[in-house]
Length: 72
Image 1: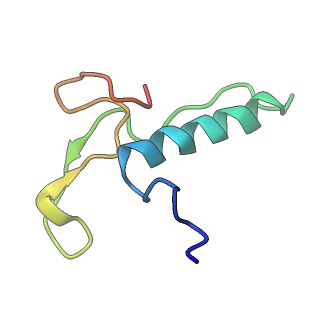
Image 2: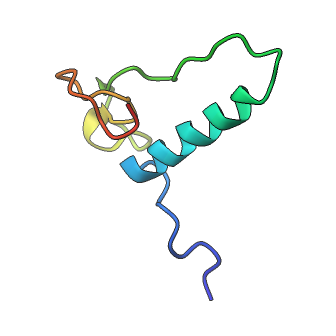
Image 3: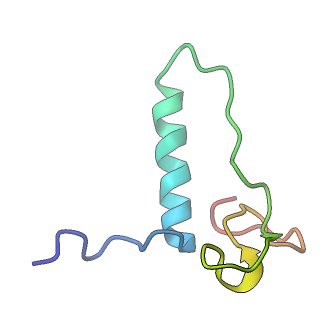
């Protein structure tokens, strides 16, 4: 049986939403954390090579046209 079945796939929007929420939940419990920010505010164009398929990093909390995604 696959231990990861039912979990969101990495780098998909559902995963991003769960990942950011988990970070915020942990940070909220630490009295030494004064603030946080996400790595990528919005999706952005990248170079096309074997690491970035399609030339777009779509890991932003907002789309390139600044429409909020689920994680926002």
